Image 1 (cartoon, rainbow, N blue to C red):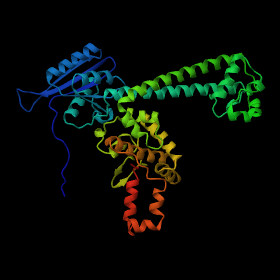
Image 2 (cartoon, one colour):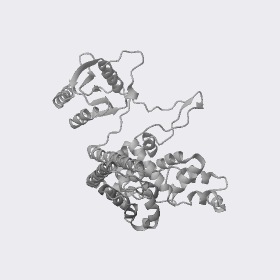
Image 3 (cartoon, rainbow, N blue to C red):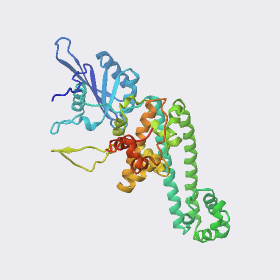
Image 4 (cartoon, rainbow, N blue to C red):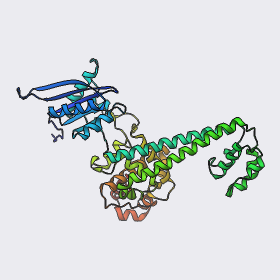
Length: 424
């Protein structure tokens, strides 16, 4: 039985392909030959990546009547070219380099790469990557920089802990947070020259005072002026990074203001805090028309198992692949946080973790969260409604479920299919 295909055979008449490097780029433009209908004209030129040269490139493409410009995602070199051409009104596509690899065995030059990219683009054999609008891009820069700052602060804290271990100061054995109020006070005293473990232990605050004898033991070591110098530098660096994080948080809050209603809806999801909501909006935006369905969003984020089939047999382990690492990081944090709650997502995590392990449970709950996010952002009127931790139990383990959903089990399957992706 023949089915109607959804392929688009239309040729993009005025198109350009760019092979971008750090100092220069090669542009191949292909347009119709008005003198010979059905034939194509091709122009290949090299341009510097300086601003003035890029403006000349935009002017030349305008003269040729080019409507779509396609480029590969080459490091960060594509960004200034993309933004400038976008500002000049071109339809700019960023594509994955894996999708436009040249045929094996052919010569490879910048010129040939640009021509090949242009030919593939004019036949619409590639898909564009998701590049958010400018306000979202600025928010993304801030949230990603915040992640990097947190990583740097964590690395510096680890160095401080190792330095204390070198001095036989076992403070981290007794104190859960080395850089909490008590820990910072003790380290400041050590840097100032205090070495008496009894005096240092008395700096403990709150419930930590119950551990003063253990603290006295932990603070007995051979802390020298050499250790004090290095520890002072490390603590100063941690405090400077923490101050930077606070400044970035303020900037994120201001940049997020136009998207405050969307962020407020995301905060209703278990495990989602202000920082996570900002990171989610920064990575996927608020316009869900870019993703036709929640499954499309999950596939783009690589939170859906890959399908590999050959000769009628499925191969591989169903891995999802590598997607947006910043989005994957925040979804993993949300899944772990939700696992501690008495909610549908928490129960979903625990059920899957018992059978398949924690890693698969994180991916499954992350996909559920993405589905919820897609529905909340697609419909401004939508609100999150938790199905409850007893959702599965009430539909599979009670006698009433058979009467409610039918003795044949069709209703139970339907309920599980509804519950599977998430709850909204």
